[in-house]
Length: 137
Image (cartoon, rainbow, N blue to C red; front, side, top):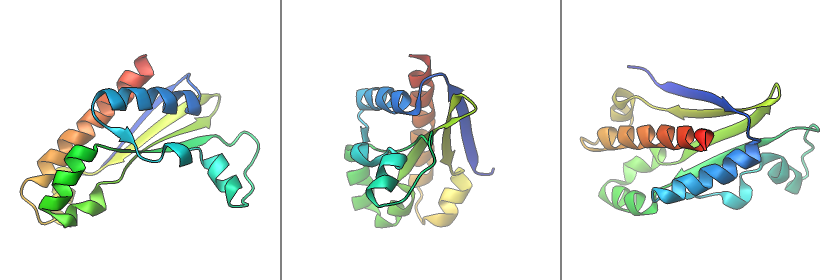
């Protein structure tokens, strides 16, 4: 089994998707970890970088604090795979949504842990369902 890229689109703007996605993830005990820094045009501008007019990208980092705290205490090696980003960007008058995730085999190869690959795979499925719920709302 290989790694995967989940790719969908929506008529919502990246900012609208990000806002609505934040509402959906909160409903399931997740948080948007970088809420004040996910608008990449704004973030780049704060650091003096120019961005093209119309550049609209939100990199949304989500976390489930309760689960992550327990997971990292059980095995700190898991930390490399815990940051999870959903990216929303404008392209051809639509908003593209992307989420990259790893196969259980590759998780096992990266982290010496019998429990984590299955648990993380379930989290990936939940993230995809939350993306779909956000698009449908």
